[in-house]
Amino acid sequence: MITRLRLKNFKAWQDSGDIRLAPLTVLFGTNSAGKTSIPQLLLLLKQTAESSDRQRALQLGDGRTLIDAGTYDDAVHNHDVNLPLEAEMDWTLGETLTISDPLKKTRHDGDALSFCVTIHADKRHQPVVQEFTYTLSHKGSATLDLRMQRKDNSKKFDLTSTQYDLVRHTGRAWPLPEPVRFYGFPDEATAYYQNTAFAADLVLQLERMLRSLFYVGPLREYPKRLYLWSGEIPDHVGIKGDRAIEAVLAAGDRAFNWKHKQKTKPLAELVAERLRSMGLIREFQVKALGEHRKEYEVLVRTSSKLPLVKLTDVGFGVSQVLPVIVECFYVPRRSIVIFEQPEIHLHPRVQAELADLFVDAIRARENAVPRESQFIIESHSEHFLRRLQRRIADEGLSKNDAALYFVHTEGERARIEELKVDDYGNIQNWPAGFFGDEMGDLVARTEAQARRMAKQGKQP
Image (cartoon, rainbow, N blue to C red; front, side):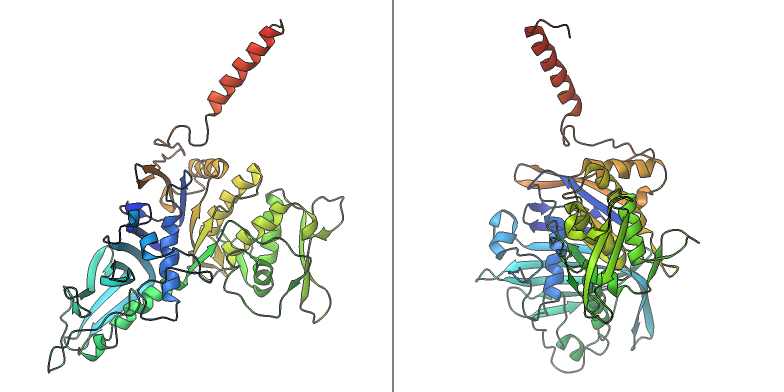
């Protein structure tokens, strides 16, 4: 789980400051304020790690990637290519990582990692790494660090550590070449030293964390009359949710619950139950057209007195919320899922129920093992927020498990402020009028009614 994020000189952000991330992190804010850029930075790092080009510091994107940030000029704050892009993040490992020094016979243990990187533009305005640092820690205290830094403006780098004695092989002290992507040590980092084999472990942990990131966008696929599944197991429902039905079928006998000793349920049953609780349908089935066929149809019943119909023949909301429900439970354990406006096209009541879905999902268990999933959500829904406040008040959601933010703009800079929620769910620093002025509208309507009735000679 990512516990801290900071970005500098990325799009609207000159400096976000430290952003605490919880199992459930929700970003509210005005349009074009910069809230989308926060998860976009994570997706930018992910797509770079998955790029086949090992020499490219950042894969800024194209039509085939998760996001397209344009050029370095587009991505950097105020389009000032003289500014460096900087990113910092902390995350938990879920297990203890042990680094042993084969020369001194010492060991460095940690259950969390930090990574920070500084990227500049070269003469061609292409991103290049200036420096990056890994820090291993245990219970908040650093136990090991490893830094790679550019020498002046050359293409040569130094490798340093403040807590580990790096020992070179005898001979000339050759500098290191440029790193791999924005985070990887070149082969020379281990070839030139006697005790730096652990560098590969640090890189592996960062790549593992980035691989655990998944994204579901706001524009999800229209329902289909037929779905094809040949037995392939998708890693998640897809950016547009187009693989949600495949995921339900691929889940097989995986069983879930979110309370100790609660009866476990297969994913298809869990999805049907959640859709019923949201008031969208009464029955949900994924049915093969025949034995040993790869064509499937999704049938739903909206009322006990109505027949089963195909998903295409009911309201659009069901097909929009279905991938969200499936993704919450289908992704691998310890996944980090980014949802952009999951409430889109949903009735206000369903938007509120969606908050309960995420509350259950962060404490979900699979075969009695906590899933430890993390969700980063961008939302505009007042109903979603109000339900989270209610769950904090009735102790269904711990304040430590939720991080709620408001993003806004001051001048040319984005600002983020964590909402101060008390034990009873009250927000003490919510900006006035963000969700509209309900009381003001009521007063204005009453006054308008009085004026019109007066003109008509009626008593208000």
